[in-house]
Image (cartoon, rainbow, N blue to C red; front, top):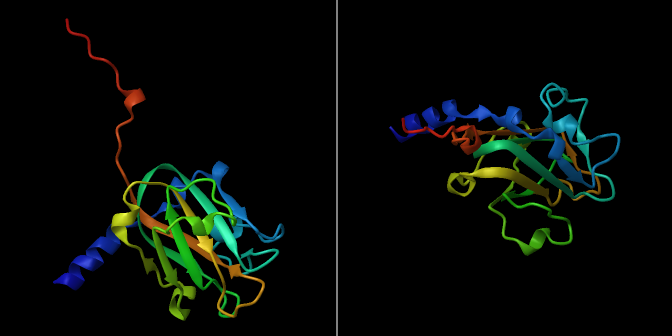
Length: 176
């Protein structure tokens, strides 16, 4: 019975790429010729010839704001066997992080990506830590081979939107 309910939860999760506020997306230490859009944007991320690549060293710091509040369930991070990401730290609703202060804050969740994860197996997140997410920061600390270049072929976020009331959209009802 437990396995059935776990699968039911999976089916209700959607790809959250439509919820990304693209104007605010940032990636620190990305190569100018292999930027974050290649791994994050639908259409680009399905092409294995396009990828995000680190520049000065193996670390990447990715900031993804959403245009509405979401509940994050799982993340897919695909990459090559050698240069693919290894240690991933995720921060919910943590803005303006840089390499100098990223380790000052405890991550909402962290994981070491397996070979299966790099091929597209989702990482199930600590769901309670990702209930009212307005932004997600992904810190890729190192890669599988401990080399200087990290490559990410795909980043996909799965979850649900949180139905919130738009207070500005409400009209005051007058008593007559």
